Image 1 (cartoon, rainbow over the protein chains, first blue to last red):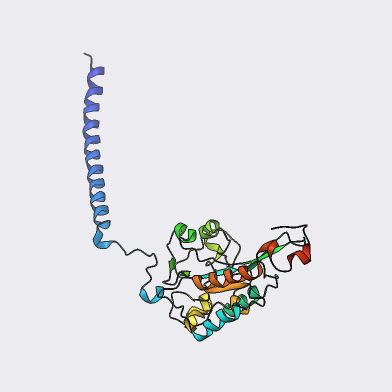
Image 2: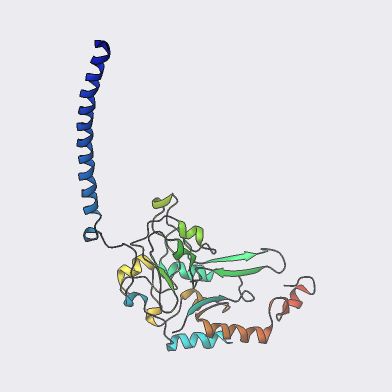
Length: 78
Length: 198
């Protein structure tokens, strides 16, 4: 083995340790980010659906057979 | 509970457009929108037929099925209404409706069209009955006053029928029994002889 071959190995070892450290930091970061997202998506903070939810007052039947309506039916039978 | 419907007796419609005018005036419908229109088939030819068309208040309304914000609802008397507060003007209901009932106040794409407007069967909207806010957004609420849509009440030839579906169907049947239908109707042979049959 020459020094030429030893030197790059030593360098690689140092770099891989740094990379691992960096990777660990990045993973920690994403883990923390994921945990935060999970909290944000929990049912406790979900806003209610905006779809129309008409109550009984809106959907009640307004049609009634008043004298006015009966008169309409009568003249339409002519 | 009665299910209210429109029924246009095409044998009687004379294409006077009084229903269109009455609707626009009663509900103060904005420029560019016609909640009701008279469609004429074979216009100008012998045997032409006219039918007054608006929202048909479908039982399983396709507009409601495609609405991404679910702004449609059906009342207990089968009137299909919508909330303009929720409408985003996407135009899906216009594409879904087989009668071309949903319309928009502006020409544009998606939200720039403005809020969708359609026939309310003169039954207002989700706001409080007969309130100024309801009138401003949806027009008059004649059903709450014990009346029927003005288009039908104004019809000069009593062609357009509105009200309880069972009652107006009975009225139409009585008419057909008495006068016939299409080329079998009273007066048809005088007008067109044997040349045209429907």
